[in-house]
Length: 401
Image (cartoon, rainbow, N blue to C red):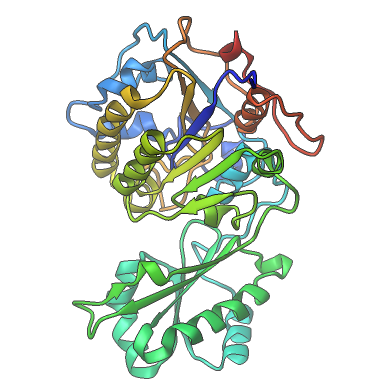
């Protein structure tokens, strides 16, 4: 019989739910940011999160609506990032041991350089419109009719390292959209333009009032890590590595045995609960819930963000009783996105880490960790696997005592 403390580990990433600015935040213009604290202060009565409060959320900061309580079944702490940058890929990659020394390129404030756009037009044969940071739905309202009329390409970005191309499925065609995205991926491999993902965003409809993205035909051309991650170590030793949400895109499917996409946080939690209740495995299930970030953080909607956390709290309450004695639940984040901050970019923040198991009896608030990678190192220790020298991270020993 294998001597593992925990048979199944579930890591849920509440995308962008940061827990206070890091020491180097001033280098990013983010000194003072604190996603959880500041959004709670905007809520009329603070955050109504009884389940997360029971797990120790109130230990992190004076988050309005929370309180300090005893939480014997959970440990809570903050972790700092070693890697440079504050994007989704950097945060998730570091959790799995990767040290990103050169941050991925983002073009949020200025759009993509004219030289890049010119090359894309020359190599694809299409005129490019847009070229700015925008919501995927808003950009269709603004430019969708022009794209349909002229059969051009809508290029846009976000606060992540991403180049997105939108085109109508019946006008440009899905196969053609995929072709031009492959060209964009090749162009964006140049160091000065190296983005983490190129995404095909097909849409349908007849006018700006009914244009709709076809999420099932989305195609992500993502960079994969330059070296094996914790996911690869697990997979190579026969353990399950399951991704839910953006995880497959973030890692370019590298190191994943299986991957499921989601359409919302609710869908992500539904799929997570299905994994808990219907699938017996030994290994890791890695989940990303993106709506905190995409729908509320970037849009600087503090109240919406707070309500989203409250809905998440309800789903965590539903999930906890379903966990088995040898299941480990970890709730964390990948960066910050303070909805009270200037601009629409991510914020350079520490991440919260909540670690829960029904058999814990000495749960407490632990000291801050130096790297997000301590999560991946903890997973490897649990499964008695040696951490390769190229990976960051030290295990969180307290959970094994």
